[in-house]
Image (tube, rainbow, N blue to C red):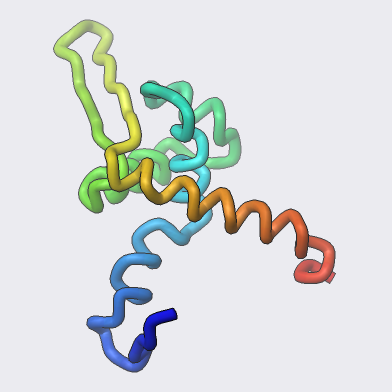
Length: 111
């Protein structure tokens, strides 16, 4: 494992992991896993406790960080589709390891 200097703002942990480590980003990324694309309403339905405002802002952030792509269609009503980018897809195996770890240690951590 590489040695990191965690004391400085230029640390990769601070600058990269913080981009997707909140619960909403993780849930969005995991919902997009294995799917070619999802529409806004599908994501909202898949994550019932997220507000529309939080979903919108999290999607914008994930797009600006290059984890997801957004495709808007000039239709009425408007249609927008979201999908994982190559960067987002490369993150999924890491997230799956985290999920496995969480499942194995859930009771210990939440006691």
